[in-house]
Image 1 (cartoon, rainbow, N blue to C red):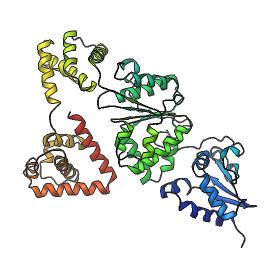
Image 2: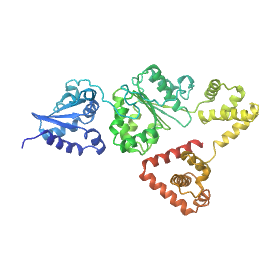
Image 3: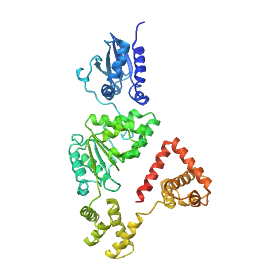
Image 4: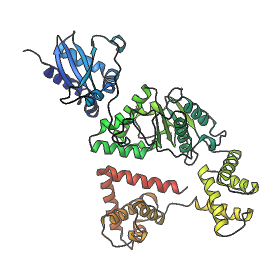
Length: 481
């Protein structure tokens, strides 16, 4: 029986599908179409050069095996790459312009093939591009206040800051790729990595820079999966020049998001684009993260942000006072720095509290007031998580009055917030079920159990709700030292 291109490619796909994950198959092989079969040479059509590069980089051995099983030792593979720019500009009926590339599958390396003609990247659909505008525009999500000029260097951050400055000069072209900055909450990780982004945009306005939190990245992945737009999502991220992802530890357990980030990482790193991550721990200490991702986080430089020493804390506080136009005696400033040691955010918070007490209480800003404020501030920041604090946090998140949580209202959003408050109270406090119920209008322990079960069920079946729960829990833990 005479072979035809459709039959050959269908049989090849069966071999390929049996050797890779369903996600990889759907992403990289579903969009491919066979075109023709001539003299044991199968021609396939791929959507763009990204596909060609990815297939050659990751699946050439598998393609070789599949073609050999169907066409024998002399089997060859030809590619057609669609030039979508020219296709979209052509008058109807549209005849798509293609670039032909021959792949001799009897050869073992990409280097033996003919040079691949350069093609324009495809038009990309994504939420960051303004419709109707040819040039891609990206909202970088950077805070313009985060600059190197107001990031005080000390022994605790010297390596990270020096590496960051080098990256801002030559993004993607240093040995610090990726840059992985880790340290406890409030030590300036976000400030430092956003300073890189701001500096890059100032030096290279044409570059595409994006700062995104891990939670937001995950939400985008979920949205793309639900709307069958994963290809567009990945195409957009692969166009970036600098990608900054904050709090990467929150990828724990999110296998689908990790798979997509792994592919994005490989594409950007291969093209010498800059990758930057922050975390609260070193790569090797993260749990629930794929080993292949952890190894890639450690490819470049892992820089630790430690606790600032006294001199650095004083310099940070003085810099903030100067920028904000705050006048505080050196004696008071040093007193604050001696007593507030945990992190920079707490240090700045103590200063703000001091100024507020002096302004609203019409008190003199002296050592006596400083002692009262610092004592009160440090006590408050070491308080335990309690049911009232959880109720306030959940009510604030859902935008409802705190009174509604303890009411008998059966409105859906209020019931959800009430049940979630009970669930988090059971998880994060040592209160008994009876005591928790008492905080919600005298509910009994069976109501608390039912609420916790309902939340557990929602977490396991609703990804968006799961992310909301994680975000609220994170807020609670970060707000109570």
